[in-house]
Length: 259
Image 1 (cartoon, rainbow, N blue to C red):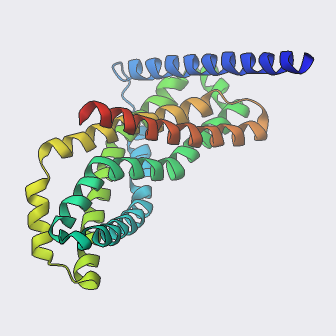
Image 2: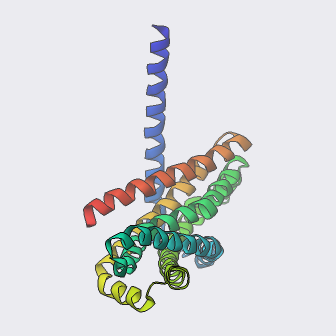
Image 3: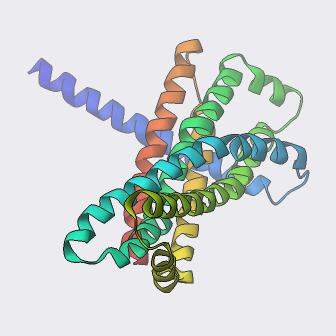
């Protein structure tokens, strides 16, 4: 009986804690978006975060996109060659990247490299009382630390997604032509016929939403961190896990609504 009570009590505490955390994060997002409409406009911080989130993530995004495109071509070729439909390999690869894999994989790579660092940075500032010091100096920590990162992510994640798509398609085409011996002209012609602006728009809106997820969750987990060095590690881990889950769940929901 005591074991059941302890289990139910623990579940209740976790549920209340999760609801409270979600509420704090939502309020923080609202405050951060509200600060975007009021001066001062922190252009220097935005540029710094664009460089950190965007420029420094280009390498890992390019590498991941190359292997993703080559794997799609290889697996697609094996599936289509038995039906004599290799001509449709281009649309298969392109639509898979533009609609689904590009936004998801780019967001996950940005989460692994930049989102974790953002959460760790803000958590360190919180546990070392640097955020309290900003408040003591009459500097709004939300407008200074959170809002510029959200703006930077809104620019960077869609741009990195487009780079992922183009690199994946190019790598898949090159691999198919040089290794599998497919007709490169047919690959590109079928791709141009199959891919429309609606497909590009779907990928863009997904990447925009995923950019909000990356900046919002990483900053909120870091901003509300507690517990010293252990709290920094927990905030970083929780941010990466939660963003990854939200990206995958959001991809499903948006796919179901937009298709």
